[in-house]
Length: 190
Ligand SMILES: NC(=O)c1ccc[n+]([C@@H]2O[C@H](COP(=O)([O-])OP(=O)(O)OC[C@H]3O[C@@H](n4cnc5c(N)ncnc54)[C@H](OP(=O)(O)O)[C@@H]3O)[C@@H](O)[C@H]2O)c1
Image (cartoon, rainbow, N blue to C red; front, side, top):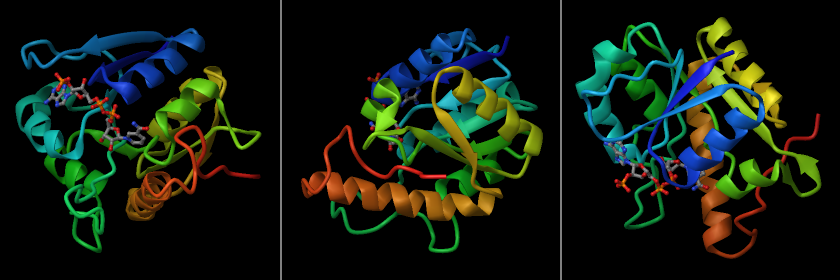
């Protein structure tokens, strides 16, 4: 059994916790108290992008050796017109640079919370796209996701996080413009 620690107990933290629990794995919810070290092999940072730098600074040692999952969509929410990370980078790449001893994955950012809960989008199974440089880390997260009743697809190296963040950005734009619902969005057909 894998223990998944989740920092951030909002929409995504709760939805991912339910997926993990549905698969028979253990969920640990971690609050803002930096003294509480995550015990899971997998730590999901279910927080807004601006919170990532502080968590990395406070918890780098606690997160060393662990699989760390970034699900943020690093938008400029004041304009809704751009990502705030450099054009050749990503929130996940920034996080990996701040946590060199952790195995950072990008995952879940292309899934609205409602599609994690429903396990379906547009009549297809919800697919979690996972990017990262450590194959064993990706396989571990994919196993947890599949056990919870969702599909998981390996989207390649952590450098693909840039594309995943662009997809997440576009999906948000479509939802805010009411072109898709918050239980809709992009699906993956194999
Ligand atoms: N919602 C979606 O459908 C969706 C889809 C894809 C990706 N995402 C991404 O998922 C992330 C979370 O989104 P959300 O919708 O779940 O947001 P949310 O409902 O606002 O929840 C965010 C949670 O993060 C906590 N938090 C913030 N900073 C923290 C810190 N330094 N330490 C511990 N906890 C902290 C907040 O706690 P407090 O309440 O105490 O502030 C809150 O529980 C964002 O990066 C977002 O871009 C969301």
